[in-house]
Image (cartoon, rainbow, N blue to C red; front, side, top):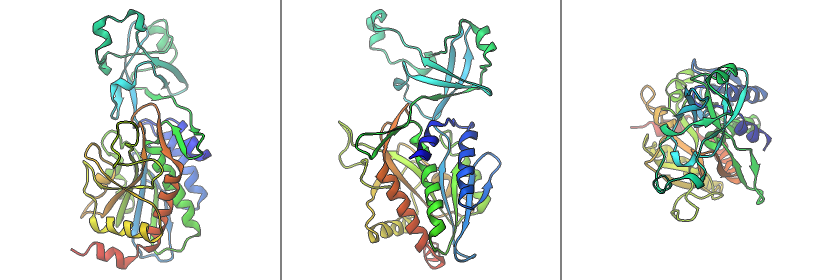
Length: 353
């Protein structure tokens, strides 16, 4: 789990993915794959199979995590901020954050009033993000300037990586979507010892959390025949959740519908066939409350058969989240088996309209 720990504990807000990209490049290079990138920061490794004319398969996580940006420095030295990605403001108060400058990282806390001085009206009020601030311990605006903190600097949550006592549950920040980055790297590593007929591109995009932006430019690198977004889905296995929805430890999620895409049904049926043939557990995800990079992948040029394969995650888009180690392992296994069977003949059948 050392690689996943490094990926999650390293900061990478949308538009500020450089540190994550360096990890991805390092790990891709270890496999002997050819590094490829677009011009806004997405990076992939190209790995050829046993033939040079087999299908081109894109497997992509996304490097960015939800975060914030400094929008104002008050005269008293407090920081106002705006979101980078989707946040529910009620998970923010009293949480610790990192404010990143070009040369140093500062720790701050999202300010909150002590309960002793709250009025009855304040106790029952939902605070909007625009009224919140970050306290970095500065005396005034001038001191903030001396420290090198500027409007535009990214702000990230703080949460150390931890494998929980059951040996399977992982707690960390940014599992959305360093889990996808990790899976892409694991697939690329395992393909070194596997015979398959394809050219595979494993890596990650940028700026997914602010509009699937890297997913628009990334396919231009390799012009894939099929694409799979590697992401997370919302687990609903906690108290008050839906017992029929995604759960930790029950296998990878295959998305049947989200707000950005109806997946290619033939491609969807193929991966289910692969999962069942190899006794790989899987879950079905149907959710209209979000989208993934596949929402842009499938619209590239004439269209690309696309899927979303991921893992269930609790508490995403907050300071911390949880996933299952076994779900990650089964996701990798499923994708490797899919790559082994997706040849020219199967691709032609998918495209036969």
